Length: 72
Image 1: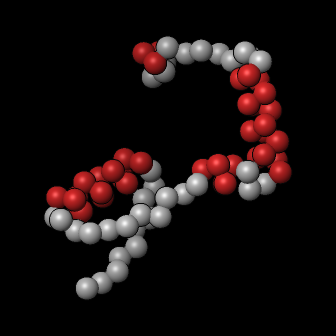
Image 2 (image 1 turned 30 degrees about the horizontal axis):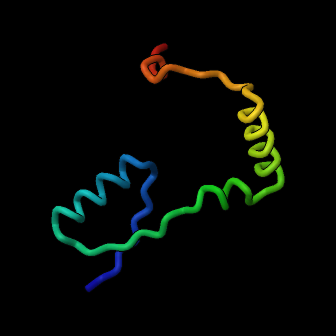
């Protein structure tokens, strides 16, 4: 038995790898990244996140229809 470490670049790759391993009945474990911990890892990130949360709570947001997201 061997250990293989795979670094996926995006969620599409991650999903494809998981589906492939599942199809072959390969047991695997995943170390999920804690996005919140990363976002709070620097004071600049924490300040920006806090400001964004305050803007959201104050209603200072722009709502976009999901159908319009990919339009040029």
